[in-house]
Image (cartoon, helix red, strand yellow):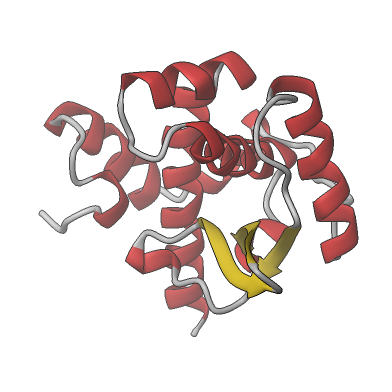
Length: 168
């Protein structure tokens, strides 16, 4: 059986069902039915406003966010769907830190729910740096169906890879 790179840690029965959906060509239909709503967040300014609105709703007391942009250089296969960084620099006699969130460009065309999921994930890193219980509790606080969205996002990425290899 061929490996499913985005589902490597999932049980064999789940992988078997996903493989059946993919092999019969129904994976795209499944995803389109579950996530029909696109989003209108196409540029970096709109993305920043969207991220800031979610941050203001759930993480008002966290450190300020200075930048949120789409980044075409993020490699989806290297498991970098988004990044959160702190850029520190000396300004006068003080050290100034700017927080940035970069979202992979694949989310520019992805369904709205997947953009929300990755933004929630990166915002959670403002409070919790590790992927631990507190981190995932914060993710589910901001997006109650976070775990299902994360799984379906893996299916979406797998479908994108399959579609690009069959088209090319």
